[in-house]
Length: 271
Image (cartoon, rainbow, N blue to C red; front, side):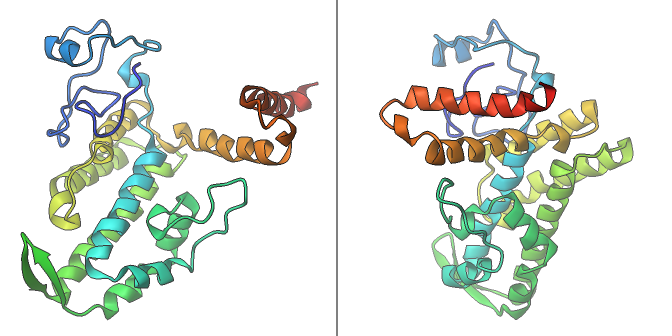
């Protein structure tokens, strides 16, 4: 497996070698040794950290969910609502982060729990109902969009977010008919993404294709998600801030001691 430089790279997917301007399709699976001359010329010194079959790679369902939902909020909803109105609305579901966390984020950076509250409480629906016609710029020209069209697009976005929450984060197993429904949803999102959200197709939109493949093989996504790994960030940050400040000049030793603390907590029940 290779460490991908960034989502803006020529080949942004870590599972397949799709080109950045063809993200609505699935590319050829990555493999080692690389046989594609074009790829070798772009990255001639690419040495895998380790090798595994692409079907064993979890397509990061939590990051896909967070990325797509936050992109809809920060790009699509801001097209029709003032930023201050969105910020005031998001105060209803924002959590207060601890000192060792990342601090209070902007409304466009909601975490999983905050997005869950946003969707379960239907907080956005009253805003949509109150919206009248909106003047926006289309290809540099000002146009007026009627409420009915705006409402249809925004309701569709909310339906997408709720469906993605169900399929990407649920830890239960899905049967074939449910996986078929998920595949239909993914194809709809990919085909209508630009028209509904007014944003470009991103690598996380492309990753939905791999989510379908993974679910076809393993019949679940949420139980293999990176949630547990993300939880470790908070634990390590708390240990760094509260337990090992006496080694502030030796970051390696601080991290070693944090790792030792976490390991001891894990094995305490087995001693």
